[in-house]
Length: 231
Image 1 (cartoon, rainbow, N blue to C red):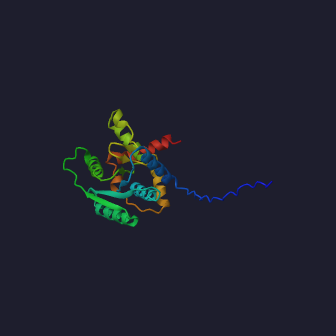
Image 2 (image 1 turned 90 degrees about the vertical axis):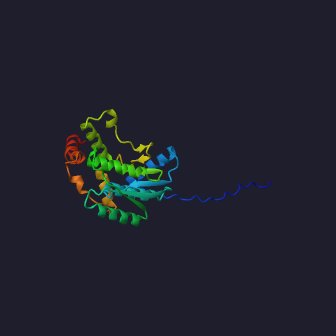
Image 3 (image 1 turned 45 degrees about the vertical axis):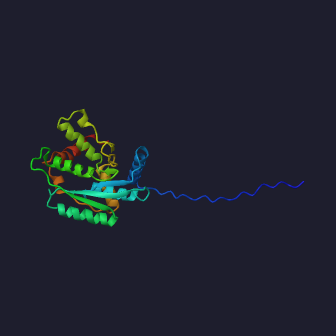
């Protein structure tokens, strides 16, 4: 009887998947984007609000990195309020940064109304959002972070806001298509990322003016609370 031979098994080459370890912050942004893409319609275009400050510069850098693994077009939006003597320099800074990254930049020039019922900061913020929401894009991305969240809560509390006013900013605003991927990230972590990647940014001198309530909370009240209740 002829001996039975086992059929020769063909060797199948399995492609080796290289595990690339993403930086922690980029990993969090990636997970957030993938989650949004799964729960909402496909996101094919993103507009990032770019002031030129460290928060928005880091966010732009992260989204530019995210583009390497996700399929979407990216552009930036900068609003020129004319409130600072350095405003024109900030525009040039953002133009240079976006050109370096090959990211389209929209610059909006606005003029604050003479009657500022919301105050200078409030009116500037209102008009900034107005321009952002006019963008032809699937998603507007903002660089609000953990410290901003705390500042907003304290500001609303001091002003006597009700329960709705005290509610925190959400990571995603479905109505206005706003995404805040850095809400669980501290200002220290953002600055650390910027320094690690040798990023450049601008400093808004008005942030040092404690006549503005938010700046007073940021520079005077929050440091006291962190020092008192740090764990």
